[in-house]
Length: 617
Image 1 (cartoon, rainbow, N blue to C red):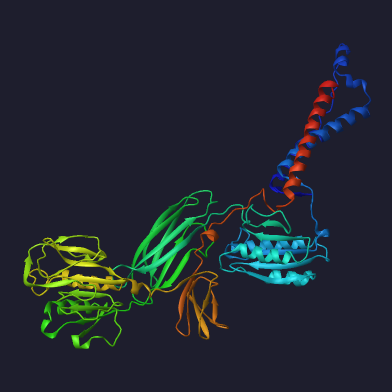
Image 2 (cartoon, rainbow, N blue to C red; image 1 turned 30 degrees about the vertical axis):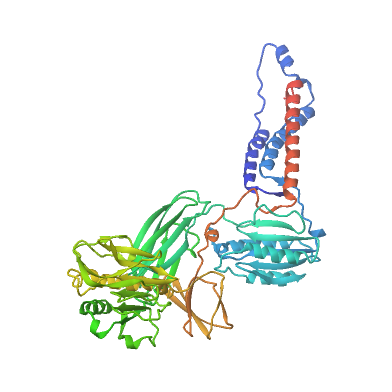
């Protein structure tokens, strides 16, 4: 016999009350009365023998205990012991060793240690003639021990298993265990984990038994999403997006703090109130230099799961934008040269200066500026900024005005466009020198009268900016801060997609990454700061088996994080399905429950019949 909900057995303590009443009865007292006629009529038991009265009291006591014990057994879900180990040919142990199995209870015992203890206890009841296999899984399954009859060898392999900081993919583990179980029939799979596969399981061979090792209560806030990208049109500025959540089974709301630090110096933080099952996304703007360590940390009062609380990533290389400025020497605008020199001093840009004779360029550049000149053969792969074009070329259809037209004010088409970031047009005056047509893919941004003088967009995947004015002829533009900002925004917008590719590659835990080199340095967070571990590379594949970032001796870099909503969503132990055999035990529990309730009803009827029909007491 076994109990599915043994936590109700403590109610048997109530049986102390009827036992005490039975053992410590009040003794009869003797009184002198004038007559015994009425007492003899009311107490017929005095006419019975002493042994019969004792038998009645004992029977009444036993009925009272049964009326107490049977409901407790019903609540505890007593069922027959259906251990068919004698009839089995093989047993496959499927053990979860993913990150959540490292959570410890109040005594310091992890879920993996609890699973090992329960598996060892079960193995003691299995005959030696039954072969046992051991499969452990995290992101992928591993056959730790093929089918063996040696319990010592199996237990040794079982004890050697350790928790992996990897999110679980249980479906692959179940598939591997089913293949092993199908080699020898009849068979059974023991699945030890903190979460079941679910109820949509087949009733066919092999059957599946679940050993639930989850905690009865757990509250876990964690980081389940992270992304870092360059801030639009800003040098060495990044946007960090962090998503945090609280597990569904948490009993109450939790207040957590998400703190951002750069280079070991606290930068900013946010306090977030999380309800059970709630997810919240946060955005942080971070400024730092290349290779500084960005650390995202989630802090809460009580959190048993620490692997989803920290993110470590070095800020990416802020490579300057390399641009080429092509213009005829006689057409050089000193104000354009001044604006390009100003943005070059910020360190965000590197500039190559050349005349039309230098075209085509021998060096690869990120963007090109055509100032007063256009090539006959249009470059289709390089983002281009065209200032005061003399004629048409490629996707540009333009015509130079014989007489430039000054405008005291301009109208803005789309003030939210990144090209116009931080640019004020309130007191700006421009001189239009070119008429051009905007295709459907080019968006007009500035208007002078009814004509477009600034447009930007993509033509066949190439980013293109057209400026139909002359900075040198414009009255209120060249010496203002708006013109260098416009040139800088134009260059950054042109190469925006290319700049995002310098970010550190981010991998999910358990991924396999092709690497080269002889060793790898892992950088992990610790209580004393950043910890560096140098490990040898035995192959050209590196497993992401720990959180942190890494760098090989050949210069290849990357980062690995748990970031698993399913792994952070810690479940609690289900008392109803605890150690439940899905195929048969529920039917046995239901049938025995019916029998217990039927016996209880018979006892109540017998108690009523004896008490009221025959004056039992």
